[in-house]
Length: 252
Length: 151
Image (cartoon, rainbow over all chains, first blue to last red; front, top):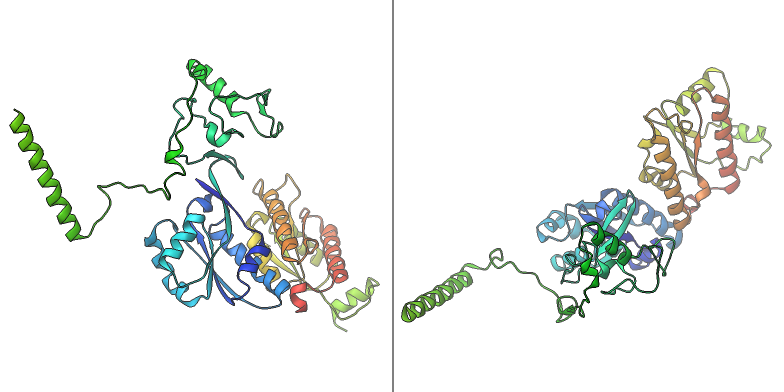
């Protein structure tokens, strides 16, 4: 799940200082689960922000709040069409993707982020989340016993542990940060794959991560084209198939 | 002189005309019953304290506490069962955590965390109920109106 935490009230109040009618838009997805941007948090932020503005900027503003099922799919944004038409600005408390999804659908409304998005994490105990995936685009978990050194090692090293690992803890903060390479060693030992740790991992291929601009993910069979384009594509593919068939016959 | 000002005068405080609006979220099984007992025994407590009866203090959420301030309260407190004696096992612990969280928000927005408090008492402790009411009334009277009510 994507985790995020609320920005300080002062920062949000500064963003909306020119507006008197604000919509706080929550997201019912990940940020709702990590208790930072769901329906309840939208209500709390609406009340707190209203009081902050009254107290610090000496003005009364109108704040409404709504929450939609998800902010990463454009279908759901339709539900706030009327509210977005009425408001002067919107504080979006979804993750960074949610804010930009909203910007795509409502290009004429000023939209501000209410959260700082953290990363991909799992809940450890109620109320505590820990990052587990850095979204590097080139997974190596099969080599490391299912524990990720990219996300969980302070140095992101591929051939650990380093000299800073002591009694299973990381030198960056020996009290709170576990050495993931120690955990990997223990895990590989328990599943009888200890030979993995003796292999030297080559430099990671980062081309799937931050290389080549914005990353896209496409499932061709699911991507919807318009009818004309789809027909053209079908003709093209059939032609290719016929050619291949003919070539196969020729060879035979 | 209205009753509430008498209260202030009796306690030796100057009656300057400021009577704080205080909202108390009281648990049905303890603090609310204690308030009832205080009434039955003719024990007085400040009349400017408005009680809101809840089935358990675990029902009280951060947003309820903030809304009370937003709608003009100068002080708010939550009165739940003694620790370990909650009718619903741990509702009062949840309330305490939420009060702590709301206090942080109140400091952040400039209202002040001292305007919010959590107390624990049993249904029999009507004396403590009155004491708590006086503690909050004195504290908020001393602090003056909520910054939101001054403007």
